[in-house]
Structure formats: C-alpha cells, structure tokens
Image (tube, rainbow, N blue to C red; front, top):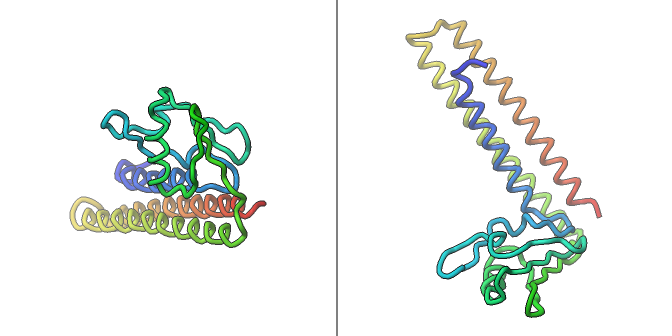
Length: 183
C-alpha cells in the first residue's frame, strides 16, 4: 500500500474499531459485561474502571454479578451503576452486587436497531470524510509533485479502501441488528 494512503486507512480503521466498541456496549437481551466498560467507581477519590475494583462475572444468561475486592466499595459501585446509562437497578446481598437484565420488549429491540443503524451511518460519514481529506490532499500534490495519472490512481485506491470499510460497517450493522432482534 502506498505510504500516502496509510494515513487514511488508519482513520478508517479507527472508525471500525470505535463502532465495534460501541456495539459491544449494546445489550441484546443477554447479560454482557461490556455494558459496564464505561462505568467509573469513586475509589478513594479516584475515578476507577469498575472492572478494576471487583470481579465481574455472568453466572446466568441475564445476570451480571460484581464481587468487589473490598466490601466497603459496594455502596460506591451501586452509586456508579445508578448514575450511569445502563438503566438497571443493582441489588446487593452485602457481599456481591447483581444486575438482572429484563427481557427486551419488541419495541425496545426496534429502538436499539434504529440506534445501531444511526451509529453505523455516523461511522460511514467518518470513513467518507477520511476519503474526502485524502482526495483533497492528493489534488494539492497534483499541483506540483504528482502527475494527473498518479493523483487518479491514488484516488481510485482510496475509493477501494472506502468501499471496503463501508461494506464492513454495513455487515457489522446487519450482524448486530440480527443479534438484537433474535429473541
């Protein structure tokens, strides 16, 4: 791959990686510990990732269990979950916290699919913006360093990259939508 294309390839890869992490946090009726990835717990005055202050496990398909390393953290962990956008009220028995995920209603599933498609479109825009930036940069190079044919070849290669990443985003959206709609 041409060195001048690598910059734009990286930008497009980042859009795919970002989308994958976004999709990991969307729950599809099953308990997924990734929904807790963005939650920070106040650990002696320092915002600390939830996974760093306790053991997160999935004992049942629709339950996440959090066993804090220190019992004194139970209240802080509960507070962090309640203030997050997970939308589930934690319960605790004094030593572990449980999050029970209700079955998703059909209406909620459809809302999630809309959200998935919206995130997919946003990431397609990021990929297309990288293509536009690349084409602009190649046109500037064409005014001095490169011939018109070289500019056209670079633009064609960039278009192939764009098409590849757009297809990948569409497949990710389709797969995640299927996962959410499957009861």
